[in-house]
Length: 396
Ligand SMILES: *Cc1c(COP(=O)(O)O)cnc(C)c1O
Figure 1 (cartoon, helix red, strand yellow):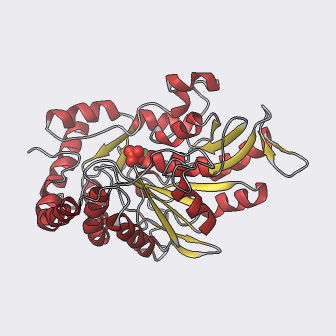
Figure 2 (spheres, rainbow, N blue to C red; figure 1 turned 45 degrees about the vertical axis):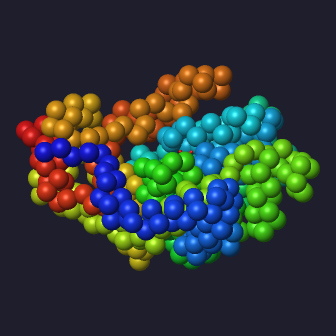
């Protein structure tokens, strides 16, 4: 039996007609950049997330870049984030001439560890006379980028306590977590992207809400920030051909926005199906007596009365025999992926940052032991049984 890591065909068959209709309308209008579809989709994202403002962008990467630009983060500045994420999270910081600072993860959730964050700040930083947080190299720490990895929100309460104490902006990388929830102490029930100053989403085709190409979004609370972002996504142009600030071409296009607008109303149903598939995996792994061989995803917010306590963008297991398991599954025509095989702190392009192996033991262990299994809303129970059966076979 062939089980791909991700199969988008059924979703497309289900929505092909309305999607084609909307694309036809865009083609008939010959309006391709920043038109009514972008506006409609931005408003739909506001309603969906509860954020007051949403700004459509060309990708999740450009969303991160634009929000950092809006905060004028650059040389002499530093931004704290996780070493266990997709490259864009730290890449955008470095592209602006600022320094990414990594803090280890919590192996149980794969998200940045708030206790490591606290420890890093206490041990390696000081505050200057103006109250700014300064690292050991004299760089001003401006922001934290928590990444809600695999569809599970970071523990935002302790992150907020730290960000408030040290006057840091919180920019959520919610690329993998659209719709995921978290119960905050002070703001109540929240969706990913709406807990910090701003949240960034990606609509890369394989994300839970995927475009037919690249697309992204920023949501934020502050109206001035939203205005600034709209200017930055158009080369910092305001009015036409007058540039007060440096921006870029970070625009979301009409066809992508139209497609996403058709898909968004189905996202909650898709998330529910992903959660049901995760529950089924758990039952099957437990039934097969495999839970001492593989570590299943932790669900720390399951009992918090949330619907989307996890949205399972990826279903990631952990085992010390990861490479053997993967090889066996490949032989059985089961798609898997390693997110991520190398920590960001050990990437060649970041050698100049001076990190070395052993700096972040939990993140490094994750890079050696995690394996993403097939998950998508339409995955069949038969396919899942086959996956778990193949893993059981490996462990014999
Ligand atoms: C996908 C992703 C991005 C980048 O989004 P793109 O739309 O591909 O540019 C950033 N951060 C994380 C965690 C991602 O998964």
